[in-house]
Length: 492
Image (cartoon, rainbow, N blue to C red):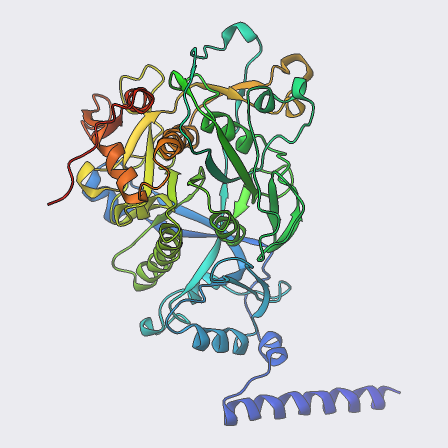
């Protein structure tokens, strides 16, 4: 019996040696041999990329630490419009990755996965082929991003909402919000959004994702997962600010409809880049006037590390590509600048917001403090001339609606106070949608120029005397309603 077991072991060992030899001779190596020989530690779902920031802190004198980027450690996203996409696909398959999902809308971003029981460092594969270490252009880490938690309010008396005058143009503007979903409670008494005129829209016959959900969709793990029910609250609050239901709102209210695309899992405040990209293209195919993005992730570029440079280029290319896709549909994109208290520059990016520097239909929004006297300390900032942040509006201690079913019984007012560029962005989304209400055919680039025309530079007394553009959205709303808009002069 022992001899028989030993013989089987020798036969199997001989076959493995033979197959390994064939792999060396013919430059082919089946995946099961690669996995058998893999010495990397097991991948347990999430990993962290760490980059030193000394090269940045020396220049801006504000930070010297380690930057961490969380991502799915066994997944890679392929941009199908990369120049060498077919070559990358072949290399991924040869390196044992499997195509598991594909975005149904837009160019069809592809999600590849390495067998999770084995170890791999996917961050090492995202550099360009020219670097000698990566697989090629067009590969992105499946980055994870999070939302902040709100501060609950108790007493209705503490809700300082402005009195609003009804003021709508002939066009009913459409807003798409890619976030954590929206309050789907059907009882008006239990849903502050519905009680204050919130209206949905959704093209359920959209060929890329047919569905029967009138308020939008829930997109998870590359597939339709149901309606956009909000289990976190972030998206519902973004909707609130976008329709003018907030303490920061202007004195004018207009008619609009909203489409919500949920891209976060369960009750967590976490999303991933692949689902977000799929959700953005679904939103764009709804042909809204404006898309709101109140999330993002920070990326540090080490100019001395070619893989770091390549990785940033791939992130940038993906979002520039989306911006151009939206521009071809005359869609304005509005995104929060991020809450990292950092100075955005060529080495520090916050995606997707940072593409505003080169895209004329993309507006990035910073936050002003609660007293509206200075930039909020948590808000990311940038030099005006770098165009990384377009305008700033109030984003600190803003009161807005929130799902009652997510509040404790003692505080079920349906409202919360929150801070963040997440809630500054939809304030700008509101004024963009209002502009489209009166000027539905205005090109997206001209809307961005109009907002800058209603902005004035201010200097922060608390944050390194940095300048930022303050949007007078209240004045613009008034001028829209009075038909007294101060349009910028036409280019010569």
